[in-house]
Length: 327
Image 1 (cartoon, rainbow, N blue to C red):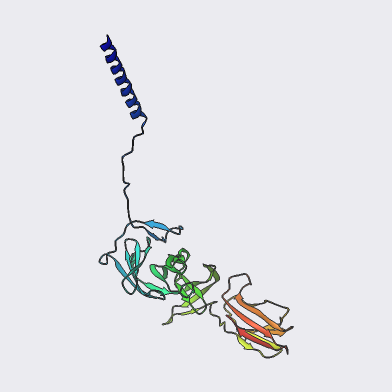
Image 2: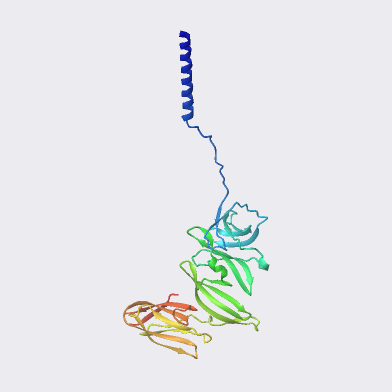
C-alpha cells in the first residue's frame, strides 16, 4: 500500500511537470528566420523629354556604345570647354574635351536623318545669359527648319530641354538685339516673321510682320515691314533737342514715343518728312534731372513692336539736353 502511494505521487509529479513544460513552450513567441531583402542598384538617369510637359522623367539602365552611337558634332562650352554630342537609344550623350561623360539627355523625338533631314548641331547663347546652349535640327518642312533646344541651367548645372522653341520655324539668334528672329515661309515668295524676347525665363513674341522675297533675282532680296533703320539721329546740346528715326513706307507701323517722367521732359513737337521718310521728335526740358524715353515701331503702343529704342535724356542746369542711347 505504501509503495502504491509513492508510485502515484511520482506519476502525479511527472504529469504536472510535463504540463508546465507544454505551457512554457506555447507561450514563448517563435523567432522569425533571418532574411535579407534583395538590393538592386539599377542606374537611374533624370532627363527631360521633348514630347512631354513633365519637367523630369526616369530612364532605366543604359550602356553607351560608341560603335552603335551616332556622332552629332561638337560645340564650345564656357564650363566644359569642347563638348562632343552622340545619339543612341533615344538619348543624347555629352562628353567633355577629356572624354569624360558629363550628361545623358532624353531625346525621344529626335532621329538623325529623319526624312532626309541632315544632322545639324549648333551651340549658341540662346537665352543671352552668358552661357552656351545647344540645339539640333530635327525637321525641314515647307522651306522651314525646326530645332530641339537644350538650355543651360547654371543653378542646376545641367542642360534642360525647352519645349516652346521646338515649334518656332527657322529661328535665328541675334545677340546684338537679344532677340530670336523667326521666318515662317508661308508661300514661295512670302515670309511671316516673328521676333521673340526672353521675359522671366520664357520666350515672348514682340513683333509680327510679313516679308516678300524677290525670287526673280539671282540673290533673293527680302523686303517688308521689318526693314526699318532703328539707329536714331540725335541732335542735342540745345534747349530744343531732337531724335530722328527712319520709317518704312511699306508698313502701317509708326514710331511711338513714351516719356517716363514728363515733369522733367516733354515732347515739344513731332513731324514726318515723306521725302526723307523720317519721323522727328523735338524735346524740351522743364526741370533738372534725367528721364527715360522709349520709342517703339508698332501700330499701337500695346501691340507687338517691330523694334524698340530706349534713350536717357538729361536736362542740365541751363535747360540744355543731353541724349544717350541705352538700348
